[in-house]
Length: 147
Image (cartoon, rainbow, N blue to C red; front, side):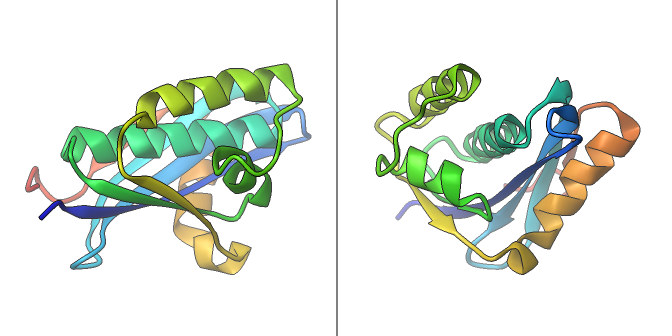
């Protein structure tokens, strides 16, 4: 039986485009324990590109934890969820590049995408904002290395 992980991902841009970062929290679905926080500082980018960056960083962190895990990505960006689910086309070149990177990362793996209301994405939003405030990327493994 494979492990189930949840990636809560978000991204933001102050100015759009402006100072931007993505953020993600990896959560063990069974226990609810937060395993990893990752912030991706991007310099100047759009909100949507930052959303992709947060999602990719979160999925990478989840697969670092367990390469065979079943992953559900929860985001308040309907655009990214619908694009990654294959229902909406991707027109913007920067987002096409991010989507190609994400699809390569999740190829042949059990990954699903789910839209959640913004109010249910506060942890990932906080991580993205912290990365913007610090103007740096970071990764924190929160469970002292247990996996």
